Image (cartoon, rainbow, N blue to C red):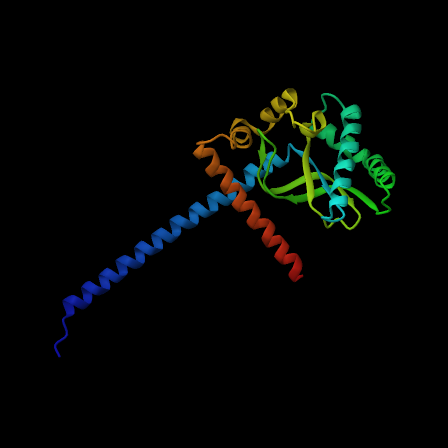
Length: 234
């Protein structure tokens, strides 16, 4: 059988070209992935650095425990509505909340006892993982945020989330009315692009904002799942 050298060289050249194309596409996609990871982490970090959240975890998903969770919420927010420092910046609000942990625990414990529950209450301030949450007119992407965490009993029930700074739930827990002064300060701190990201995400048809928000969600959710997997392994 006669070997056609020209066809062999042509096939080799074609294969080499295909490999180069695949390599170029792979490198391009890798660059895009790195850029997305950097953007997602940077944008979420900038937002998180200017937000403090409230996280209340019910004892269980039983109706009575869920109802009790809301009563604890109402009591804490009623106190905050009266005592929260007006005009506080993010640092001042965080320091106030940290110093208020014993009082918040006492308020929650009193509500529990008044409603016939002897379950324990644990209140702490730290950095915790949060899923994406829409508060109506404002949405925060998934990621790690500083928060006051109130754990009722075994803390195995559904959560209640809100924002303590800017004082979203402090101002009006029922309607979640945004405090204009605090939101203006937040806009200044995180920049116009990030502010539009968390306030315009709920607008219909705002495709560029939705894509950017989705990138942050995917990046931060992946990071949290990876951290959870590592913690289970070690």
